[in-house]
Image 1 (cartoon, rainbow, N blue to C red):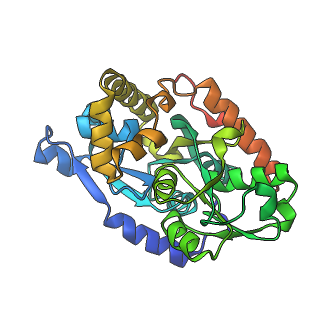
Image 2 (spheres, rainbow, N blue to C red):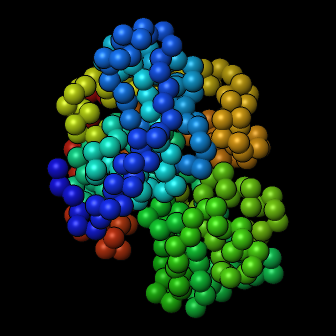
Amino acid sequence: MSTPDSFHMTRRRLIQGALMAGAGLAFPQLSRAQQGGGRVLQLGYIGPSRNLVNPTGWALASGALAREIAPLGYTSVNIHMFLNGPDLNEAFFSGALDVGIYGDTPSTVAKSRGLDARLVGFDQVGLDAWLLTPQGGVRSVKELEGKTVAVALGSYMHRYVLGLLKDAGILKTTNIVYMLPRDGAPALEKKSIAAFAAPIDNGPLLIAKGFPVLDQASRHPGLVGSSLIQVSGPALQRSPELPAALLRSRQSAIKEIQADPEKYYAFHAKASGYPLEVVKISHPISQFPLQAYPPEGLKLLNQVESFLLEQKLIRKRVDIAQWQVKGL
């Protein structure tokens, strides 16, 4: 398995060490003997929620995931939260993950760099992002020229910011710096940045604190994001039926969610720790696709790949059709 030179072994060992301490969930219906001899599914996702949410989280909590993957020999799931896509990519490249659920931009970057993984579905299609300013800050995107915009580099929000500034003609004259979502509010309060690109969950929280919205990804066709589901090549070799099992568990979960949205949103709010209204804004049920490869998701993914190539953020094209698993 090829590994980019930029992935340093020291950091990789740290990530692997953190994975060893990941939260595990054994299937209660299986005997101890089965658990002792069975496989553990290593699943990574993007936080800050310490619990897995969205349809896969519901499938895990309801038992739908267990029912589908138990016949494949899996007796438990270890879930691992990462702060951003690049960190999850490093864990994938190290061979520490079987499944990753994360943004389209870091997923595409990893695939372009040789990640041995296959796209098996879309977790959520149409992720919004909010460009927020300090109170009393700039009032137009054009006014950001020569100023500093903060965003988690390598994320779907990063692509949104690049696309927005490019369309405004100020991409080369605006300073873009790295910042995790958790650091956005303090930076805006101190007015140390001119704007901050906030992801789902984080964005509505900051808006509720009074930070003005300068722009929003959903105002621009093609600049919203998607959350993808990838299965590693080794996991696929061990369990060729894993993608279909994951899809069935998600479809079962989505049908239950659609039948009782309020029950799902209450679960999501409790599991994530975010207020109910924030969850509803950030995770519309209409963005949970029943299909493995929804047309809108594939359209956005093609736009992501084209944009990354245009901006020279990836060097090799990604064959999205070959990335998919046939028969899903």
